[in-house]
Image (cartoon, rainbow, N blue to C red; front, side):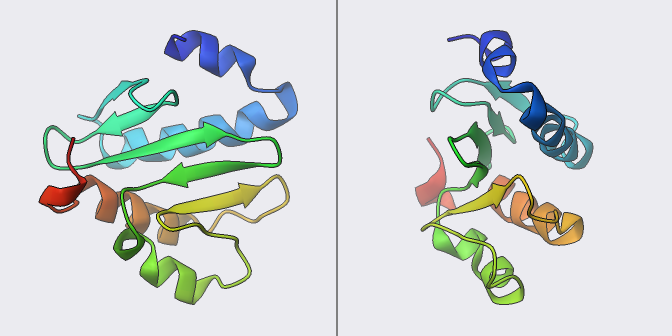
Length: 116
């Protein structure tokens, strides 16, 4: 699937929120490249690190390569569901912009084991 096809497949009621998160990543890392490496929009900071966004059935996920990238976020926002290296943002979750930017920064400067 291409990036354009993926974006077109996102339901209209969620697309603005998804676009907001994509724009946040490109605002923080304007030099980032984007591809569909993990079958979702994946943003690369050269060979330093990556983060990705996925439209799920009940939420949007912000993926990173590990728990250390989201550890502080989990402490600050225990009410927001997180996985091992991802944050799941429901349609009603208020977006903690500053803390999400920190997660993105952590992921885009990830350690060697996170690079592909």
